Length: 508
Image 1: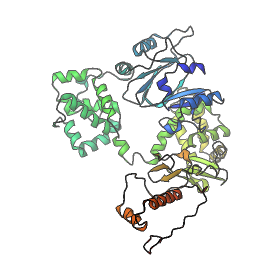
Image 2: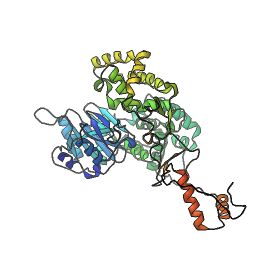
Image 3: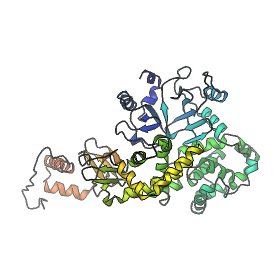
Image 4: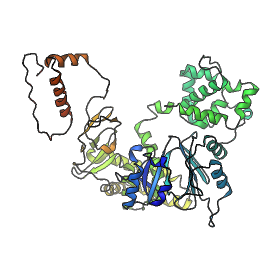
């Protein structure tokens, strides 16, 4: 694939690549659909190119991960004669960075180093993303081949022009906490003003600290608090900032600074960099399992575009169910049962109750998704198809038809003998890498202990030293024997006999 040579090397080095069939992203290693925001479902550039060369895929794509790369998608901006629209030409000139043609040849993808206040936005012909989206990649360069340049100011200039409505401070100063934009987070804001003393003091302009004395420092501190209590919603945080008593109390000089078109956006971007969690993510009720599942499923459906890429029959329904739920539901042909993933281990779905609920959920999720279909004729036809899933017979057939797409056997379960599954993650006993639980590990067992590499026990050390009579070589050998026992490897066919020279030898 010679054209891929044009893709900047720094993009190739990132493990954020996927293969694609039409516009659906796939993990070339597993053959399962890749998912936005889930790096475990992505691969390296080399793996994707090799898989593409092997056949079965239409192209490759790059997943955004909120790590300093912003992608700008300019759709349908190239005319039949090859000319570029005026707006697109202006954007490409301002950003002056690596730009390539989209697969259709009618659009452009530009990559820059920078940041935007949100994961992504779409409006008309332009889309901008820094996370939870992927771009199809061609390597077919538009104009001169350029590197991915740092364009922090320019990318915010474009973002503000197309996605941010100009805000007049004087005209909105009287907006209170119940404004329409803030309604999404008003419950959290109310809780924050009641429970968070620092936030309340910043909000009222009464905060005093040696570490936060300048106007800009206080602006940043309040914006950080607002982003937390507005659950990362930059627009809500900015509007709340403008409506705060703190902003109302500013003098003319500082009010003029707020009226600058980019000041609050820049402040929000900077505050966002220090945001590790939000009120919503810390609220256990908000992140209950079903709500999280709903968000993930809607993102998956947006990638899959089921009304376009799946037939409206039993076969299409089965393939869609398998593609949506393959990370949490697989049919085990040996056990003749569905297995489901609970976030840590795969367990047998006795009676198929979980997959039955998933089928019902998919019907509801599809109805939610169908609202976003722009073509009214397609929307009406697809909603009619979705409503048929209200029938139990249709859902049962869908689940049956899904069984063979990502099926597994008992040989696939617990196959990696070096993985030790623990309460707080999975430890690789060969490399000693400790990481999060992964559905792709296909583990069905878990130890009732959490991993803590810094854990020490003086009592245990004293006990071992006593029963081994201070013999360091024996202590190390015993550690090796116990460590071997932790693995599932029995290839050495060993039998360890504990023999002690004294009665206080710890055998019992």
